[in-house]
Image: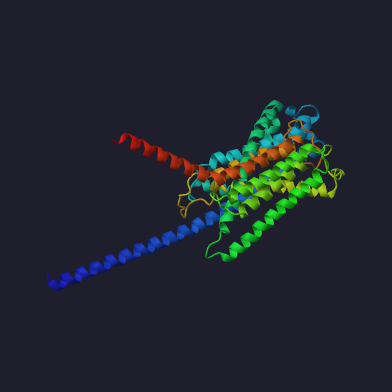
Amino acid sequence: MSASEVTTEGTAAHVNLRDSESVLQVQMIASLELNRVHYAEGRKKSLRARYYFGILFLIMNFIAWFFRDYGQGVLPFIHHIKACGKEGEDCFHALGVLRVSLGCYIFFSVMFLTTVKTRKLHESWNLWHSGHWEVKFIILLVSMALPFFLPSELVQIYGEVARIGAGVFLLLQLVSVIQFIIWWNKYWIPDEERKQRWSFGLLMSTLFYVASMCGIVYLYTTYAPRASCSLNLFFITWTAILLAAIMVVSLHSKVNRGLLSSGIMASYIVFLCWCALRSEPATARCQTKNQDKGNSDWITIIGFLIAIFAIVIAAFSTGIDSKSFQFSEDKVEQEDDIPYSYGFFHLVFSLGAMYFAMLFISWDLNNSARKWSIDVGWMSAWVRVINEWFAATIYIWMLISPIVRENKVMNNGRTVQETVDSVMP
């Protein structure tokens, strides 16, 4: 074989190799594009699914309210269920709310257990979270029906556990709200590229502080008009002290977090104080005007509906905010990662089921709430007040914890150095 033939064959082989590499490269690019399309579709379905779960949770709230206020007169067939007792008394009112809550809790617990380990969009459990709604509907019906066949003693035990679960839900909600406030503050932090943001942030911080101070004045004039309103005076005065403490800590030279986040937090704790005062029983409220004009007027109904939607929004916003509860912030997100933690999402909704039960029965398992009322009673008022104190405490701790950790590190380093110096001759 001549040298020219050898050269020709070598050139042809090189061309074939290069062509095959080009084909493989094109196939890889096409495969990556196809995967990217599949991931985008899976992410859209996943994001859409959370709204479906939110709607289901909203429906569960209305069902619980229906069983509390109107179920006994509208659903006579339940009277024949043995577990419901005489004339179905144990399946309506407070116990009816707890049974609906337990059914909702069971459903979201099943969803939690089946999706808690899901991490990637291509996993089979991702399809379960985002689809198969016919199967989920059957599971939901079974979950809602099962508690109505359980003895009342078990439902009462669930009610005791639900108090703890509702408290955990409130704690998670507080952390989520505070993390959002801190994020918003960072967004408006002044730098060379954000001069307009800085000016707007300054304006917003001023407005929030003015609003919180006006809120304190309003609470004094409306809920503590007389010196005999000692408990309300204590609640409002302590709120004002917390407001001042938050501002002082935020402006401390070692903290230096500015006024925006503290202003938002101040407004938030004033709002929580107002909610606590509004939760006091109507017969015990120390107000300038008697606001107990009946429980069927349109103001009461609108307030009730707003409260229900607020429960759903609180569960939804906390459920999709799993990043606020991550211990490590160094995780790099991949293209095929799920858009939010499914397990955490369903866990929050299961705790939210306990929370709405406590609001409907005012944290009292033997409560016989009036129609269209929600979260009214001394237990509700004290839960709100303690929630406010927790909120302020957690926020202040999040401000000073970096300084505390820094001082510990410095002290440990100083101790090590002193130990080394004492050992060295």
